[in-house]
Length: 414
Image (cartoon, rainbow, N blue to C red; front, side):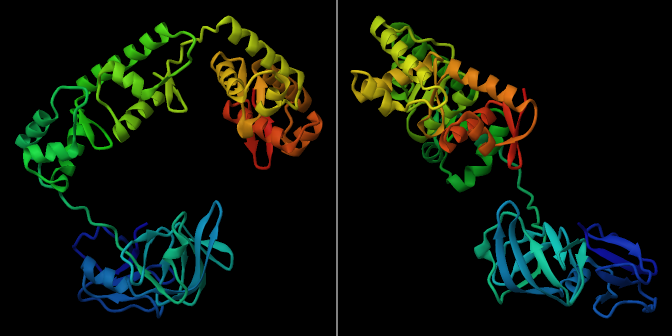
């Protein structure tokens, strides 16, 4: 929000940083600008600065007279940091920029309250509560002053030499592994600081993609992704009884050379695009279905039956292990396989349900609430279960869009 300046007389200069209005008594302004040759009118409040030089610098200097002495600071969840203090010397406007003495960072005011009432601006002598949103509480200290801040001035960047772009692209090469920032900088005899803007411009132009400092040409990256997915498909085909495979094994089979943080970022991108799924450092194709052996199928059927027999209060992995003659590792593996084939779902806090069991719970919840909002406690009591199970179920239903939170209550959406 621009500071409002009341103008007396006629000025022939442009002041785009301010909102200029004809001065009239009673109109709230941050400063009064008197054009050369005009006289100071009546009705200017004592604290409002008067400027006779029609320049932005003079107006900013005049308006910059206010200050707030910090008396207390609070951090309120969902609101942010609130600073309480006494306003001195000038008008404080919502949306304005503020700096704390001894600190250079300018912070924008989100909201101002006087006597618990939200106001657009506060005048001198007011006890104010200033909301800054999610900024660190430690930035503000009792006894320090807040003063007007300034907008950061954009620095015009010099044009980037086309030759340096070509040199970087040549250094990156055409292989899917690309090149890291240090290697490129050494090749072109430049520092990372000197090349930072060049890398970003090449990224914006679609000539490079970057993953944690590893730069690859888009066509080469697409080729690498194709090789990665082909290797994963081959592993699925050759070992149909395994749901997933270690990332490193897939990369090695594809002969890509990706590793470390760049590999992590690449895998994350493939997950986000739906090309692969990842669990416990292993990956799989979303459409792949595990081909269970006879023993695996028999054990999974027993586990599903045990979970289903628990009704709403299903047993956990430890309790299932007590009822089956199988070691814990085998139980964990069969539970993972059950998830892979879509027959078992693990909710938060290790709560287990079968896919059919979750369908039954959903239909029971739909029928029981009949479109009316309900609390977690009401759902828990209605189903005769524990808070742990109720929380796990409702968090899962929220995530899949079956329920929606409305304050302390929820409602069935579909």
